Amino acid sequence: MTVAADSVTSLVQSVDWLTIAPPTITATVALIVLVADLFVSEKRKPLLGALSIAGLVAALITLVPLRKGNRATFCLTTDADACSYTADRFTLVIQLLVLGGALLTALLSLHDTRKKLPAGEFWFLLLSSAAGAALLPASRDLATLVVALEVASLPAFALVGLRRGDRLSSEAALKFFLSSVTATAVMLLGVSFVYATTGTLHLTQIATELDKVPGQLDSLAKVGVALTLVGFAFKTAAVPFHFWVPDTYVGAPLPVAAYLSVVGKAVGFSGLILVTVIAFPGYADVWGPAMAVLAGLTMTAGNVAALRQSATRAWSAVRLLAWSSVAQAGYLLVPIAAAAYSSDDQIGATVAYALMYGIVNLGAFAVAAVVARTRPLNRISDYRGLYATSPLTALAMGFFLLCLAGLPPGIIGLFAKVTVFSSAVDAGLGWLAVVMAINVVIALYYYLQWTAILFRAPEGAAEAATQSAEAGGEAAAAAGRRAPTPVTVAIVLTAVVGVILSGYPQLVLRFAATNLF
Image 1 (cartoon, rainbow, N blue to C red):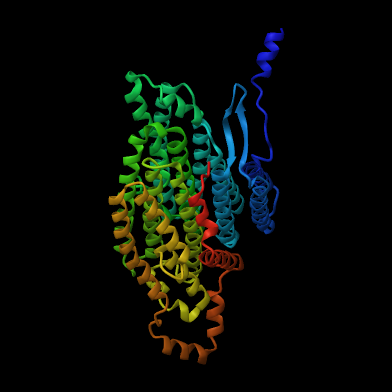
Image 2 (cartoon, rainbow, N blue to C red; image 1 turned 120 degrees about the horizontal axis):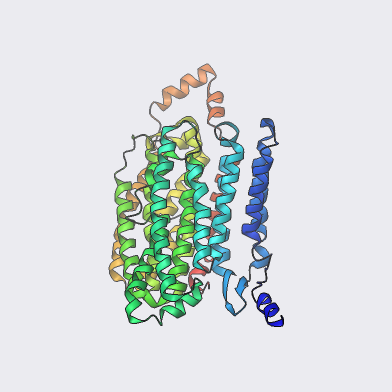
């Protein structure tokens, strides 16, 4: 009886509730919103948005006591170093990015949930996806990684298709769903191969066991490593898993497109970093060259497609941002590839670049949401003369575009690109550094072209201004263009953070110089 009791006791894992607080709070608030939606009247539906924002703020606050980054929970009783949830510095930085991105998405969505989108469903789905996104960077076994990835992804499919009766939205959701399910199935096959060859799902134990794989299982292990990366490569929109991006961004509500471009990418890159750097370092000769080739192809395909966007085509602004996000994914892959040839510290450059990209890209989508209120087709040509009607909005958009291009005054964008470029050079990937340099020059053209459009005089500006003044309609027109307060707050927040980081880039770039694990 004593032996039986001891064996039962040995299976009990301790739970550190503070460590798991960020995703737990987000998921709990999601459930509260789902239940509250059944009892709240239509007039009080905005309270659900306020509750969701409060929940995301609370989740962000719980990151403060975890800032030392040395906590873990759900550890094996037989091996204290094998834990399913770890709150290290990498985890906390990515959780800050995804929860902050979800918070800004919530601000962008407050107005739409009052008129265009079903409030209860939207807030529940957004919070559920954010909970999965916050869980993923802390996951340290393949089972938890897969679960977190699906919890982040499945609500996103529904968010894309939430505009009922909209053909584009339904088509985008279906394309996103089918391609993602296929990638997930391939990834699960890879996970099963890895488990078959190692006998464990914990990342640290996988790394140890892969070094001792028998010769007859080596090929199976290599195939498993390659297939496991497919699901995460899909989430990052790396070529050739990128084809869903432009149509999905166009069909989705703009706040959801912004969410996918930042939080969705953070999920994919977190998973890639964890499985490559922690679980598969012994097979760097397999995934290293693959990541380098993917990086070169992804940045090139994204920039060439963005370059071809016509300014007068419907939804060309959103399409350009979509293809730009594909190109940015290529830059983010460079330090991961470099880690295979040098050291794990290289992935800090990906984290630093992701923070910069997340802030300015959310800001760009916020401005796009403002323009879409009066120009629903959201063409690049619709931004012509924005400075004349909304000077601060135009200045903010110009700043965001220059950050993405890596030009002053967007110093943080420039420094982030230099950091990524240096990681390729330091790892001996000179050819990839050359490809990146060429792509940066290509991207300058369409970023600067869009920036110039913001400050061009509107067509017929003098006549329009005279007629508006005589008819007394200028004030009414300005009121119609006025952005909702939450959207304005989102633009101001992203612009202020971008300016601060451009003045003090070391706040972000220090992550590139330290070991995050």
